[in-house]
Length: 205
Ligand code: UP5
Ligand code: MG
Image (cartoon, rainbow, N blue to C red):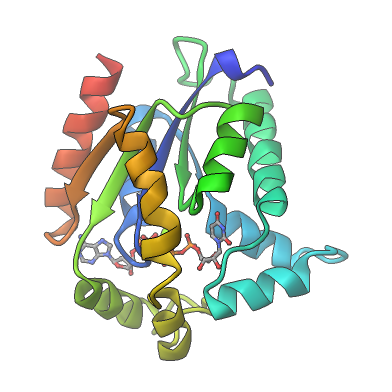
């Protein structure tokens, strides 16, 4: 697909900050195609014959970042597929609208995706306390079946060095281009969503 024909919004924030929840709500209101990098990796991990299955499983369990070539390829393929299926469907301005959730988590990923696939127009960044995030993940663990929703993996996802050192530079980078909208995601889902819609409506107006 041609990068001029898509609008990309990155949705970032710590584990359990509410990225997936808010993206699902936005999909209904703005006919976005929502691509969660984590979900795409989990799908690939379970795909029979995938050469990356074991690698992805280990990274997700250990809360480390999967080599970017794998993630970028999955995102690119999913975008191309959505452009074929969805074009014309609600994308009235003729541009594909993508919410990319949980990616880029590292500076090298950001630069490579911007350069080789498409530059992001906006970054929605959810912040809340680690306590809140951990509590949410523990509740979700009762039903999610996710291999990283257990206290050991949760602790690893929060360990110093992953989020602060790898993802925060990405936020600072896009902040320098005035592309970041930071939203406190501590409150109830609907309250957070109100702020999200303000940011997104402004962007599309
Ligand atoms: N919930 C949500 N909002 C709430 C609110 N306002 N009030 C009360 N409850 C709220 O939410 C988590 C839970 O909280 C849910 O039960 C929800 O109902 C509730 P969710 O919206 O699912 O949060 P989200 O931010 O999406 O959390 P997630 O766990 O998905 O974030 P992670 O960043 O940890 O997970 P992700 O799937 O993105 O990545 C998983 C792993 O994949 C990474 O650790 C890494 O190993 C790998 N990965 C890569 O290697 N590269 C990538 O580019 C991406 C992922
Ligand atoms: Mg998620």
